[in-house]
Length: 276
Image (cartoon, rainbow, N blue to C red; front, side, top):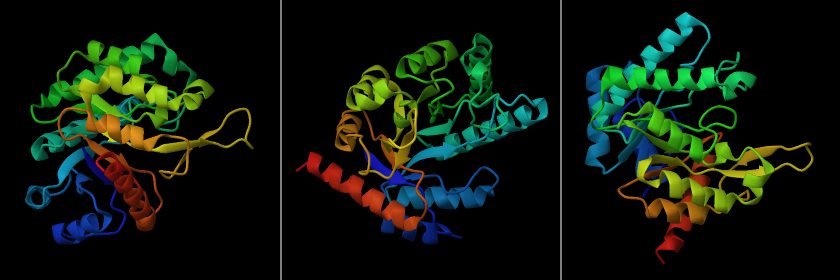
């Protein structure tokens, strides 16, 4: 298991980036440049990561490959392919995106997300991206979301079967699937179920925390910094340690460098207790 997260401070060279990574105490990183960077720049950052024993956990896509605008969808799929090629080039654990949305907002809710048509398009789009690259060293993964597939570990397992490509594996974000009171109330049981069903396929984990805002009805489950919510994060780390290989555990969605410093320090302390 490796701990990592985003780098919020600006950098213009591998040396500057590495200084921020070391300050944050990361041993896993999100690759710091995208596929538009010149190959020489990509290779400089790759050598920096390799020389300093930093696991490249993720290359992000973060575009709507399910857009209902045909031109936008085609452009976003092409971007996903380029990013997957980058992940293959640098040997990242995974290239990750959300499945996408039929709403105006790229990650927004749409009532048809539960339809057979949406699911089938999600499967064929994922196959298209993977087949364009045929990765051997990395995989393509979908980050779960509360209102689009996969909404549960069971649905993620079904997607793995339906995509039917060895290069389709799991990026686990259990918090994004806590979309109801039952999963919130029994979050530890839900997290165990995620690892039980998906464990052999997990290539990266977002370790987040959530808390109910009981002043906002009928139900508002909000993401909060690690240690400020209801999630048993030591349990998450324990289960991550039991996976095969070095699986990165990332903190995310924090506002600034100082917040990432605090979150990574909290996670390191929680990890240290596991081995005490």
